[in-house]
Length: 133
Image 1 (cartoon, rainbow, N blue to C red):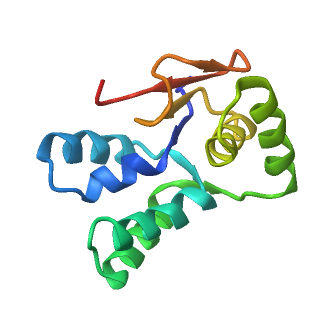
Image 2: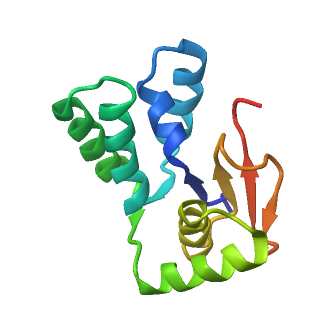
């Protein structure tokens, strides 16, 4: 049985970025058919246009590709309630807790992120992996 994997926004940003090593690793992760939530796609568009200087048209192409390549789960009331619980339990930021909650609710076992603590395990199910570590 394969491990269900979730990607944080930074993996998507690196897949479009200038650093060839990071870009290669990030694209390999995305090519494996990871899960993302709607927040990750929207954050990617924002970061790419505001911080990376990518045009909105290109950022939208990236978003469309993610919709085609990834399993996309919504941020809904259940996700928000789970995120609130995670903030209280693990002292996460609200935005990180939404990502962790979505990954847990989707049954993921691995969360690719450079922003969270490498090796941390949430609810005895989801392990954070920094692929650039």
